Amino acid sequence: MKLEPSLLDDLRTRLATVIAIPVTPFAADGSVDWDNHAALVRRLVDHGVRVVTPNGNTGEFYALGQAETRRAVESTVAAVAGRAEVVAGVGLDTAGAIAAALHAREAGAGSIMVHQPVHPYRSAEGWIDYHRAIAESVPELGVVLYVRDERVSGEQIRTLADHCPNIVAVKYAVPDPVRFASVARDAGLERFAWIAGLAELHAPGYWATGAVGFTSGLVNVVPRLSLALLETLRGGDYPKAMRVWESARVFEELRAADASADNVSVVKEALAQLGLGGRAVRPPSRILPATVRDGIGGLIAQWRSEGWL
Image (cartoon, rainbow, N blue to C red; front, side, top):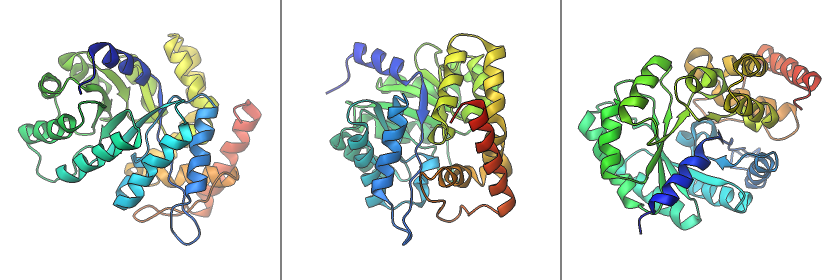
């Protein structure tokens, strides 16, 4: 059963917000700590987060097995208990992505986010065919495209959505706000919820050119900070937004350094220092060196003094 136009419009509106990408916490034996996973998701929703994406990159999607990714969706749906939209990450091979999308539907997720294809040989037509097969398998769910490739054009996105009306949003993660502005307008600025996919660091620049929301890993740590940035951007108060941005800047620069090598490790280290989870990550991520860990401790102290924690 396809989503009615009114439901698609409502979903686009709900996605215009901070989209939290929760971490996947690990126990001492390396398995997923599902009790802590649920607690961290509940903490997000308790602080006012209204969209949660299990199996995002900050959730170490590519380091999880199929059983773990499926349970991550189930755990998130149970933890939000109807208080937030669940956008389940899916990807990798087409058949596997379709199976994951079908599971997300059965588990109670309302939407899926399709990871950027990792195949080394990607044609424009193949990119469309890949996403079309996944979106058409779950016409009852909203679909968010995750675009990290600057070769993906607005025309390709528009063509894909002509086939699949349940594509309601685009998470754009190419570090070029001018390119984003062009792609969004070529695809249809009002047709999709355009999400700044490079988190708080890039949110103001993308907001100025058409974004209506942004993804966040920082929100796992200091949800008040991420939500405050959202509200200042919504209000068009860019000087105030940049003051809030300054409080997030160093943390996000640590996550973005060296092609985002420590994206997850920085978030988990901060959670560990707050007593909210362990710092363990799976390869190819790493435990942070002591100097970086000390720096994160300083940021936590700063956030406390500023009233964010």
